[in-house]
Amino acid sequence: MLPRINNFYNKSLQKGINYFRWFEYALSSSVMIVLISMLFGAKDIGTIVAIVGLNATMNLLGLMMEIHNQITQRTNWTAFIIGSFSGAIPWVVVLLYFLGSAVKTPGVLERVPWFVYAIFGTYFVLFNLFPVNMVLQYKKIGRWRDYLYGERGYIILSLVAKSLLAWLVFAGTLRPV
Image (cartoon, rainbow, N blue to C red):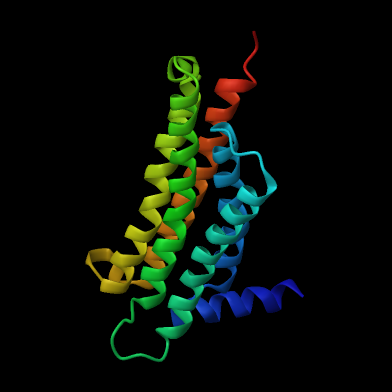
């Protein structure tokens, strides 16, 4: 079973597409953005479902970008643009919760633990490096002319984002007292 999956994966990479990445990101980045939104006060199921849905849609539009551009002469950026819009909305929701807390409860900003700001800033920057990697890959700039170089970039970004989030949460909440 696994050799077949590996063969499919390798053949897909040679064609300039990675199906597995987009489904994995749809799941893992949705978990991360939900955790971040909850740190800022998002707790109702409707908000969480909307954040997951929009974030997963953004990632699946990344897959659509790769599938569609298999058959185009010039890169079609429509899926990228719609995905970027979809992916920005959860960040707007997080910002609204953050600002809403600040307005409702004077002094709350001073009581927010340092690691919450660190998580927000770090993950926001890393989150936005994924589309930068895609743009460089599709514009074939520098070393990104090689699809596999961009693929390595996604792997490194994913590993760093998940590791940093885990370490920041550990440092902020699970540290010994």
